[in-house]
Image 1: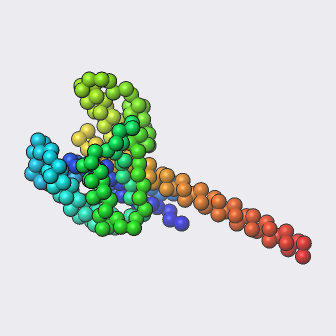
Image 2: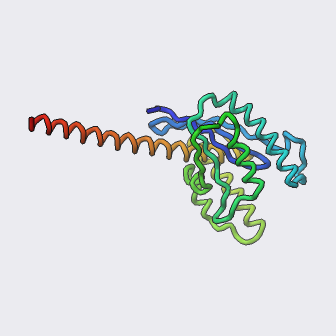
Image 3: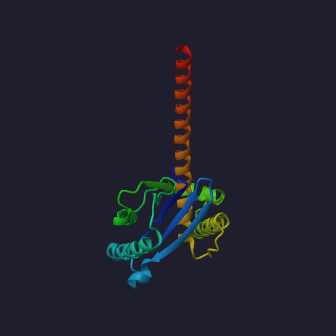
Length: 216
């Protein structure tokens, strides 16, 4: 069994995508390095470019940049994790679904186990679930303020957990790292559960063998 798991985590978007390589060891220690890819910068689009064609162009540009980053920074990947774009019962947009599919189908990720992570789980992993569960209010200003508070809470939680210094503009990186933390911890829990079950089976086998030896 491995002593370290390398999780490639993705926060999908058609605008700015966060990507992180999160390393989680058997004891729970976490290391992370991350990047963010701005589709507007990569394509030269303006914020007003919101048509499906513009979004597809950004997805393609981000996908190419991600391919290079993964090649240079993630030589070994045990698990791919991505944030599932649902928010309290709402479904992801068609563009987000296309972006998620495009990023997960990178050739480098073929055959690697995949784990979807809910937003609420990612927030909880870094101590931001309290802000996540706050009522957003009814006005646009109240909803915007809640989003800003949540972004900041995730960034602060990731910084504390991984000993990083992400600034308030790096929420895409923080989101990706939080997703990787959830997936890495879950994977270790499953590995340890299998090991414990295998150990119990081995003990039963030895006990049965011992009883047979005594009988003989």
